[in-house]
Image (cartoon, rainbow, N blue to C red; front, top):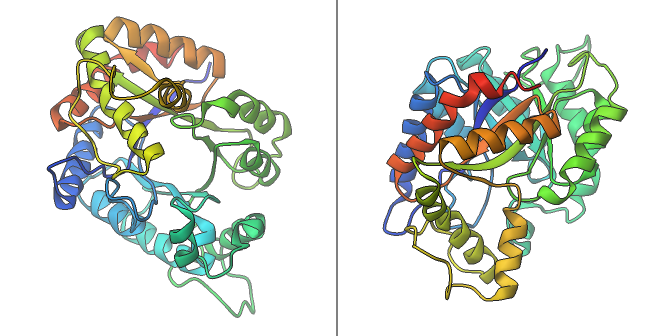
Length: 334
């Protein structure tokens, strides 16, 4: 029986009253804690023009975290490939792999990771996302060993074979990952609606490749664990407020938890936030272990990438520590 592994998704979140420098220090602090707790990967995600997310220069931040840790894999969850030339990404991640051999992952997505105006500033070609499959294949060629006579090479990059993952919040990337025989990560932490369909299609249509002989599916999942159910529910008001800020177009900053969201949102906003966070698991140790084991059994996820954005760094560390203490039991569910 295969086991489910656990990893970390971090956006270098900035909190109200905090600074970007503090966010960077907290990300490295989190990585240093989860490394001995047994987490497999620590991924950072590309976003732009969002005051509360400091991971825009994703490759730079990956280097900072990898340089401050020893064994945990560090990567992107993900780089938004249409924002970049595949050659540049191959060079960046080839550099990282050369500096930290055997520890770098390259997750790529096709969304812009920002608003429409910033997308125009990033992408000179407005149709860049339509070429995503070709961009992925070009990237894979640059990371593979250079062929005789190849005129354009990634230096460094060629021959590093950095593992490439496809990320998605719909069925599109699931099917592309299956076709190319790549590992697939679904964004269940903010778009749970298509999760089961995407995982089913990925597994049904998977073609073995030089990268994988069988499918490997990861699911991003919001998890907030605390010492009691009541405390976890209180802490969960921070990501709820964050999602509320997003739909209102307000600065996307971590807010202190509140006792209740009543009065902070209207019924329409509440429905939207709850749909975005619909897969979230929130509770004390017994609740989280039960719900997480149920989730793993239902989805057959090979890997869970835990997202936990809390206002207080101590609360965030405690949440990851509690989940780590459950992993040996949950991992056996599959």
